[in-house]
Image 1 (tube, rainbow, N blue to C red):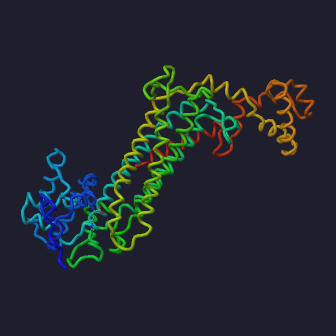
Image 2 (image 1 turned 30 degrees about the horizontal axis):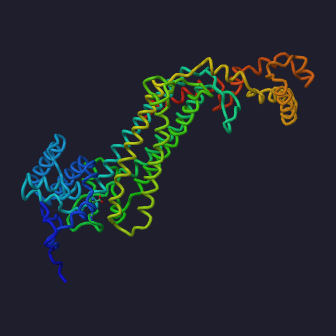
Length: 474
Ligand code: ARG
């Protein structure tokens, strides 16, 4: 039975954009539910750029005339200007950004505007838009990672010989160079940078021309439009082209790892700023106060970064779930890909910016306190064992002996450096007066000169490697 028009439903301000097949307007609540214009407007400039390339391709292949393509390209440029100056005001009747642009283009150009959608579908169009958007944003995030890395390098450079307790299980383990600690985050950011670069290869493939799902009857040139848009290649299967969002998952996954890294650093900064640690002091420009406790200075910035990881992990999970059950090819479920992506881009970018500022100008290390910290514990115990082992005592035997020394020293409220030479020699005849130098914190760090270790020589080399990598970043 043909649908009856429902007189109780308000007539939309513009007719449906879909075909004459529809007699009645959408229920207004359903129209709002269905629409993506409220959020996909974020894609408008990419949509316009994509459409301009499509118009040029249509002329290049003789599907429309060169004059028509010129009109389309400049009409689209006008829509872009109207969007930028705020005069373009899409409504729910536009449904999505693609229709919004086409509607306005047709208002500007009349019948020629109606030619823009020849040989394409919103399905390949939206796929093109998201890829252009992500490509752009990935470039931006990689620049921010680079900035974050260079802040780490500067801080590291100034702190090669600053010592800080190194932990395992959050128990004092062995002291390390502060630069070494900071450069560990450089390495994580380096992997993040590379991972995004790798994801970019799959983001930068053109689905344009795949049509709704099966290709098109027009003699299009997909490679031509792909080249105009700076894509590295085109999807080889039209069904895959319009239904693939793997690249979005890769981006969300790489973003989740960036946040994992920033969150771990945040956790350290929060601990270090606590009264119990006092390794860093937060400066006024990057910390906040309490509304009731006048003495408080809170590490809100790293706490927020740590807290924001949740939403990014959530977006990754959401995208995996959206994709897992849908049959080929396009399904409206895919409209749900956008808000999570947009929010991820904003979150990752905001966190990277905040952490770079925090490290560059929002905190200072407390050298005095750090020096005390590395001198007041048993984190040189391994070095006593290594001392004996290097004099031929089997390591396990040396290890057991030092364990005993730590136990008796603790009972006497002494540190290893407080033992007299007689006491050392009573423990083992191989101890000589050079034991004191061997357990000095500076020497403990300097001695770990194996490749990638915390020895100052190694750290200086690592700094050089880091700078070379930074210089290689595009
Ligand atoms: N707004 C849609 C989206 O974001 C555009 C594609 C619509 N395609 C369709 N066949 N209804 O996914």
